[in-house]
Amino acid sequence: CFDGFLGMVQALQFMETDVVALIGPQCSTISHIISYVANELRVPLMSFASDATLSSIQFPFFVRTGPNDLYQMAAVAEVVDYNHWKIVTAIYIDNVYGRNGIAALDDALALKRCKISYKVGFPSNAKRSELINLLVSVSYMESRVIILHTGAEPGLKLFSMVKQLNMMGNGYVWIATDWLSAYLDANSSVPAETISGLQGVLTLRPHIPNSKMKSNLVSKWNKQSKKSNYSDLRVNTYGFYVYDSVWAVARALDAFFDDGGRISFSNDSMLHDETGGTLHLEAMSISDMGNKLLEKIRKVNFTGVSGQVQFDAGGNLIHPAYDIINIIGNGMRTIGFWSNYSGLLSTVSPEALYSKPPNISLADQHLYDVIWPGETAQRPRGWVFPSNAKQLKIGVPNRFSFKEFVTKDNSTGSMKGYCIDVFTQALALLPYPVSYKFVPFGNGTENPNYDKLVQMIESNEFDAAIGDIAITMRRTVTLDFTQPFIETGLVILAPVKQHITSSWAFLQPFTLQMWCVTGSYFLIVGVVVWVLEHRINDDFRGSVRQQIITIFWFSFSTLFFAH
Image (cartoon, rainbow, N blue to C red; front, side, top):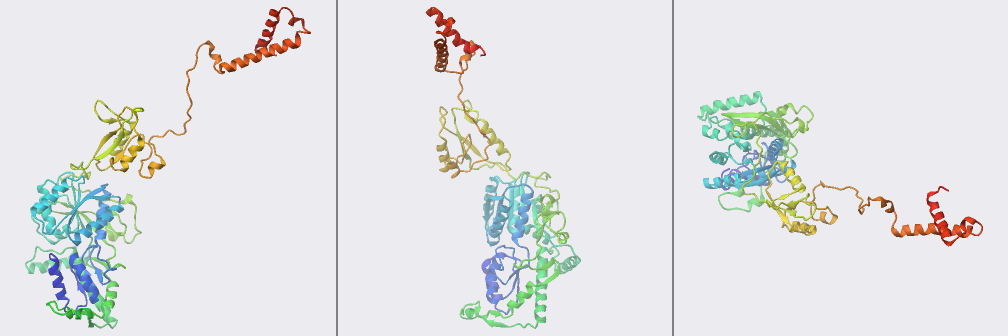
């Protein structure tokens, strides 16, 4: 597993003999190579490799007898979401296993509306100086939730440097995938210095239910290891999967022979032509009974030391589940479980849930209390303000009128106003930091052109803009707007004039022309009455002065008398 080339050569040399089934390897790199060989020779491959890209669709003879990283990363994403973290940093070993595992983690986090804000890989033979530079770059990032997906040797080497760089204190969260639990389970005497550098770390372990069969195997293993002078080496979860894999092949072969099956091989014409060299490819033979044996393997159903051994249509074990572990003191403490049956975190063991309908209510999620790095029980926030983050350039209109919305404070040079207050309060609700700076747009002596401000966002001169910017159809084509937090509703505009408050205020309802016309009609009424009455009525006769007074008197009488 440490050398892909040697692993490939040794596997091909092993395949020169007639093989009916393969068990192993554990590493993903060799499993990819052997899967091509197994397909060609029609030999079922019982692999413990967790690489999610190893699929029975591409490799029909591939059978996964261990956990799948798809489910492990789903469990990690559930832990991240349960603690209300939105961004994480991923550190991984730069090979097939590491890259594909982080890709699966990225997909799982996306389903929880979380994301990997920074990811960095390193080779398995990385020097100490390279690892230190890697950790320093991680410390500059805003996320303090760090996922470590690697192997035992490089992972422990990295953790030893983490403590030296003071990255195992308050505020940090370290989540290691199942490589860490596999190492701690397999070694009874872990150096105190190693354990000291892992305090507060969370890790995952494939869930193995407790059973008498499991206890008996552990007891036999311990006795045998003492006889062989390997008393420090214990069996871990992958050891249980190996044990059940052997039994699965044995049961499949037993069923195959009970059905009258016979073992036979035939030459591969394509390999027969590739003669020469020391690999002797022509010695490899196709298993004539490979398809039938594969069918028997996929149909096995028994209870092993790892639990229920049964495969789904994709060639994976049914009911994948993980223990969530917190490293405290000299040991490990299980704080809960994750099961694909419900997809949720719980303090109830997964096998107790299988007899009930799956509960998918997020309100029922629960884990026991965690002791985080820095020996604190308070859940870390998960982020800090980054020291090297790029600032967002926020365009702000520097208005001349309506300065209550937004304006520039000439004394301090800062921006203020109602829109600025709404923006800063909204940022305070985010669970992660945002570095920004306000850039005034306009000279302050006149209102700026808002269409030009929108164009500057389109051309990336500004990352965003805040202010009393109207939402129009044309602007929404290229920009995203927030929900409006200022709206006027239905408004009627009317001109306002100054009213006269003197004793002549009664003249305001009509214009001067209207009053003249009204007065003229009154005089006309008086003249008409005089014309009709002065020939027969003595009151309308007399001197000219008296007759004019009579005309005016009748005109005004029409105003003030009821008749």
